[in-house]
Image (cartoon, rainbow, N blue to C red; front, side, top):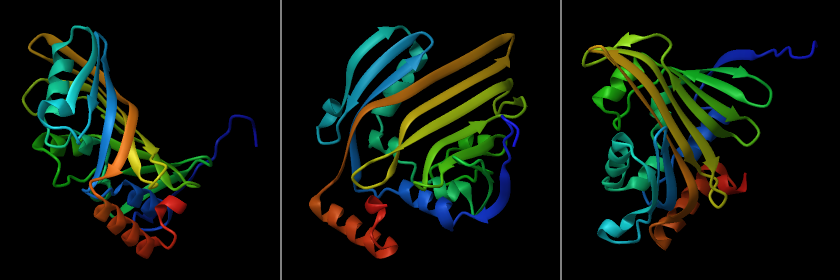
Length: 243
């Protein structure tokens, strides 16, 4: 084979079989799974670091650690995240299976699979999420050996008119996933969004990245941990953590 020539084997498969099903199973964290984490939010103009711990009470759960620069949009995004009932819920992509649907297109690139799909709205999606789902391309990158997703990308192939006027000329969204070592579950280690919109003689550009710099994943109580272990062993033999 000539150097630099890559041959991809492409085919359509069920999302409920093989490595795709195993990778999806690893994203399906139970509601009793919780995470204490430190996250760094970065834009072109500012940097913010926060620490979240669900075991603390009230405002102590979401605490600023450091701040540099000025960016009202980044501060608004951080405040919105911290005000959620369970900010750690964003780290567990547990609605990925309904979003992917029943069948996917797979390109076997050797070291990784490229899984292409049409994003299907789930119960967690907002009206804006539904609007985006009809217009963006969606791809997931999967390690067929570990049977875990590595990355999920959404991108806008062509400029479109926005839901409230104007024109969305560029949109990219990326999730980087890692595997929690104790339970074999996938979590979002980094998230980035970049967009450009034009309207009213203005060009609006937004870009920020959220990176989890430390994380502690645990169950809400010992009973929940025991139930999870028993269910996974029954469903998949030795369990996810042993794969």
